[in-house]
Image (cartoon, rainbow, N blue to C red; front, side):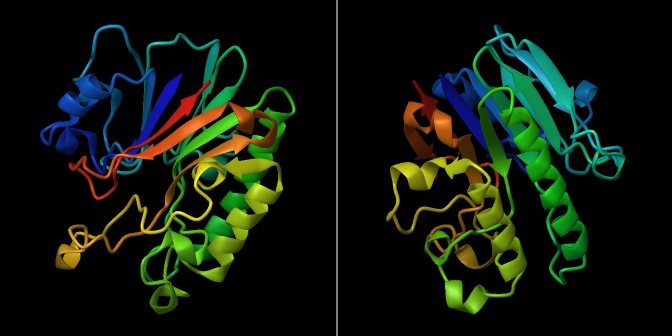
Length: 250
């Protein structure tokens, strides 16, 4: 089974930047998208053989997640069941025969860290949500998690300590997430790989120079980790400030 995750930074925008070509050429079983910034009726791409599920934010043109799947799920749910968190379309959970797939777009703390306190609560609640799922089946959680966990996951680590996405608080919550029984699939396969990023600023031609951050992940239940065949960063695919990432599961 092959699953792609991609923060598209606006579905209608990425549709004009080669999304269909990547989708058809990649031919994954499931495509999880974040930051779609669109209502279901605004998503006009309906490839044959795939079902589309969308969780839009209540605020138009903001946030939102979507999943294309050609494997019919047993069930689908939206949000994490906490009203405070479920207005921004950040989570879709899909149940398959032997695992749950969770597509997530984690809140950004903002440049001045104005949402840091909110994020701390979100992280605790989301971790509890995944733990509850894992009591029933293994979990594969993917998406833009808006944090570079370790110094190896960011090009200029020392210069970015304390900045949004690389605060000790955010990094600590990712450490707690992994300690709760999840595996960072990319680091599971490539524990020492450097200079492998998933997001680059639009400023200063930094993508061409690969001055990036790894903030997009597949987190997999520990008891499911032996099924990870590979994790791929499709850094050659443009269209967004993030690149698609892919996991291959046996």
